[in-house]
Length: 77
Image (tube, rainbow, N blue to C red):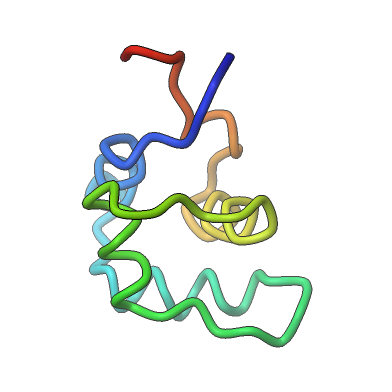
């Protein structure tokens, strides 16, 4: 079973050279609904304080140029 990985989100964001604020703007543009993904929400995701819902995870992956699976890891990793 795979689950969202805060570490992988941070690593992917840093690899493409984006700040959390820049990722928030890009991810908001990729959302199917007109809802904003806020900078502080992305920081919570990266700290592992919360996990994104499927549509937010999809928008983050699109904004980072990867798949949702790239932002997930096996249980226990």
